[in-house]
Image 1 (tube, rainbow, N blue to C red):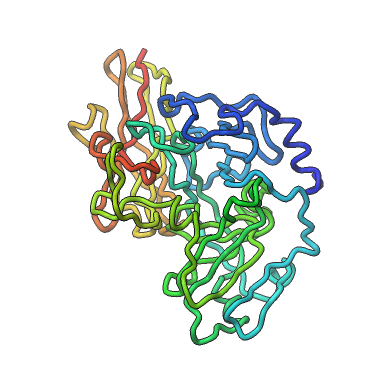
Image 2 (cartoon, rainbow, N blue to C red):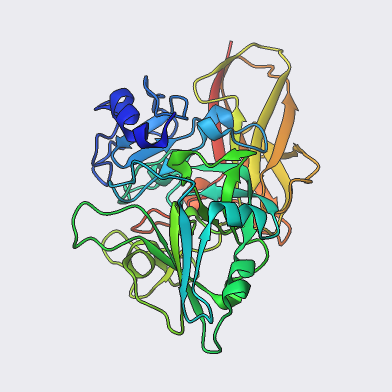
Length: 401
């Protein structure tokens, strides 16, 4: 498929079929988690997913995908902020610019990235800060995601530090700003720019051009995106076009207004009164998701069931996943994979169970990481206006027949 034809094809297959039409903000239908159906249509390079909008594309991965470490590219969720996305990107002429407080301003081609720098890989979870927002009560503003605004991939590219070393940072350099190619429909709308302090930079922060051994899908940021393992996806700028080094923090809408939570111990507030002080959402909290079985499924009495799912955090690593079949009264430890994918990746888990009673059964899963953080019960989750960072114990309800 020619890149120039991407959104022409997308318009044909998507049209007005989006579940949330083109507005998918706080007005989106508030339905129970995972009750939304997969769309009958698909964007190019994607299977049919749960669709909230076609412009910008907002696509959620179905729950049943979360049973293994890697999320297939064609089932990986999609989240754009701006409606105007380039319809044609020529990989032969594409360049990434590095400017600002550097000794040498750079314009680096894709071929240069692939041939003139060390090539590195990192397997890491990409998760929207509003993943599972629909679980908050009362409704929080924003896209009413279920559990599938997340995915895990092996990202290949070059270390950001290596590009900055080639450009040469000036002595007063402190902040790095990242800008992608998506544009707002109205000129008054602020650009989607993220900033990273030099102290946050490590060898896992990369510019990725590959995802699970293939070119980045167009909707996941082709041809180049920023990868910051352990951080929420709002920092992973897609279709990265420009890197600017500065000596001071620039106040930006998406960092200073949009993606923030209350700056208090519980990161919470009330519906009637916003917290007086906020902070950006950065590091992900500990979480697990059951991929099998799924809500509403039927399992046979006395059958051999293997509950499967994934767990992750911001990079401390998952220590254990516990499963309950009696609504959280008792817990049993699930088996985890070997963890060789790395501390930023999913840990896949499985739990063998034999149902012996007819009727409704609730499977619950909670993850605990290596520093003792664990998922809270849903009724312990504190509310915030943005609906960010929900990580309540996961639940799946099935029928034993």
